[in-house]
Amino acid sequence: MSEISILAILVLSLALVISIFRFITANEIYTKILTVNLIGTKIVLLILLVGTVSIEKDFTDIAMVYALINFISTIVILKYYEDKEVSK
Image 1 (cartoon, rainbow, N blue to C red):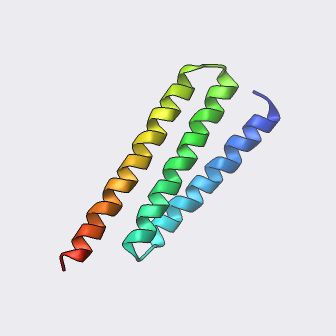
Image 2: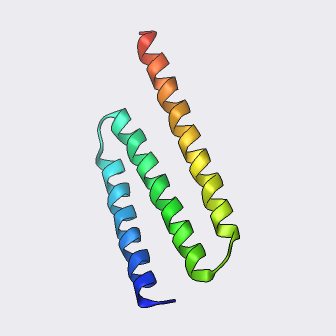
Image 3: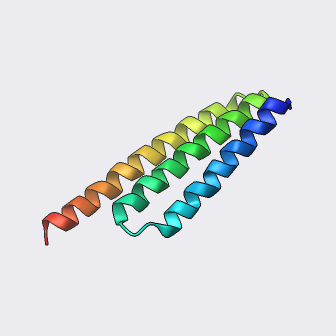
């Protein structure tokens, strides 16, 4: 692995830790949902970076599936909370 790749992994990991801290300290449910989406996006980037460094094409497929699941789950959760607020 090159030094730039290691640095990119470290910076992305630090950003992931900051996002997890933001999730823990958030008060509103929508902030928490968006933070979970942000964490998922950073994990996708981390998977792609590791796949690029290790020259494995399977990591790209895994990252695409994970990104799709992350996107769909965010939409479903937001729709659930929107319907819950409307019914109040």
